[in-house]
Structures are given as C-alpha cells and as structure tokens.
Image 1: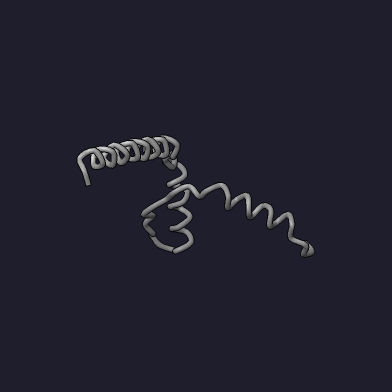
Image 2: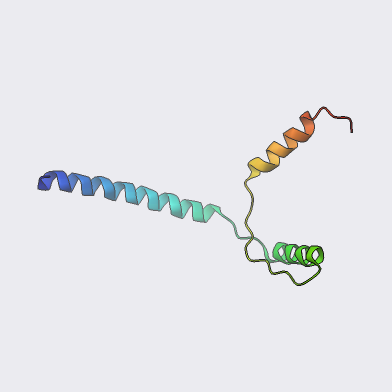
Length: 81
C-alpha cells in the first residue's frame, strides 16, 4: 500500500467512526432511565412473587413492537372468549 492509499483508508475509517459515535450518542439521548417509582413497584412485585427479598439487578424498557404484536394476536385470535 502506498502512503496515499493508507491516507484514504484512514480518512474513510475516521468518517465511519465519527458517524458511529454520532449514532451512539443519539441512541443514548433517546433511551430514558426507568423512573424510581417503577423500580420500587417492580421490586415489590418480585419480593411478593418470590416470597423473600429478591434483588432486582436490571430493568430496561421493552421495545414497543412486542406490545403491538401481542395486541394484534389478541384481536385476531378466533377462539371464543
């Protein structure tokens, strides 16, 4: 590889890295933290279900696609209710 080719590769990789860093910072800005009262309610539900002081280690929001898919499944279900 010549020096010019190396410079072009470095420039291309730098542009890609800059774009990826922008995407990561945008995604971090879009993701919201779980409110403290929701964490408390989830912890209480875990403790009530397990019958002890269960420890909640991680909570994250589920993508809305799951809720949409489940709603469609319930509406399109042909079984008698």
